[in-house]
Image (cartoon, one colour):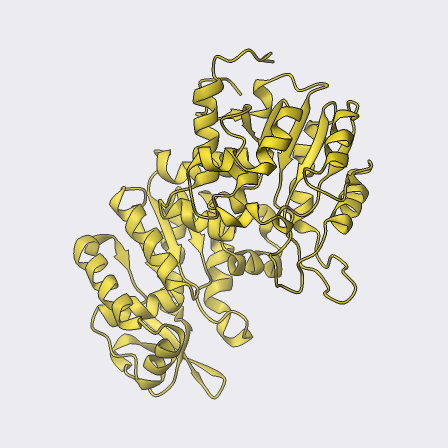
Length: 422
């Protein structure tokens, strides 16, 4: 990568052979609370490329697991073992974060050595400054002041946590050059296409149950001109239908009241979006009702109904599929309906498959969306599957991203520093 391509450093900008490199990863994994066994190593596997590309460096791995008070809040011993198995090389677990024995171990490391420090959230400093973006405060923590003198570079590869401000995520930015690892680099390159790419038409299909998140994404991307069309579905689609004046019936109102204490404010917000960008908003033209578990597709004129809406209708599926076929860039966050029920998975299944087989550059984020891809076994057909749920949403919604802002800040500081570039 050339210096002109990105406004942040990557692993390719420096000769890291023999250097001591502190790598922040996000390997927060599902844990069996009884046995302490890791149930899914997907997040660990994500970072293997970064660790392999640092094979000739002295690699010190920094990470967290859950948070205090949770059943899965534990040490990183099992994580180090699992990473060793996947990597085919030993990753030694060190019981401590910046204690004297940890610092001694780091000083004694040789090129090719890899160690993993203790769960960063076992130290109060990691959470005490949570949410405060002031780099000076994070830099002044014991974590940073004790580890910084021992390292040459800091690699930020924890995109999934980059919407947070914590010492292990942003505190080293002004002390040593901060580089994007392969996960972070790929996320910023691909998600950046949603805002910088000139391909048209660009569409966003927003569904799922997190309507407030989807609203923020919609507003930001419509305001910035990053999308040409917004396709609404799931609970987001139901809210927009109500905003457009459709009465979905008492059952759907009760459900929304149960899910969102402020659902009426969401409806008002949707009204504002429709008023401002009416020609760029698409809503379902029909819906699928659940009548005692059986599917019945009805057009909007047949509403209100005493039965709940569980999916978009077949006509909407065809209309949205055509939009997907015509698009050059597609962003999806959330399923189109209650995809966990086979009868009502049709909308989600058909639209996700349409995206997978389209010619468009496709970006998919959100935990439920990734679950759909895995269920349909089409993940490899998607151009970019984001590793960050909340981070992906924050990025697309234009919210502050302390972990990314620190990367950019670090390059500005060290652009002309006395470091050997590759």
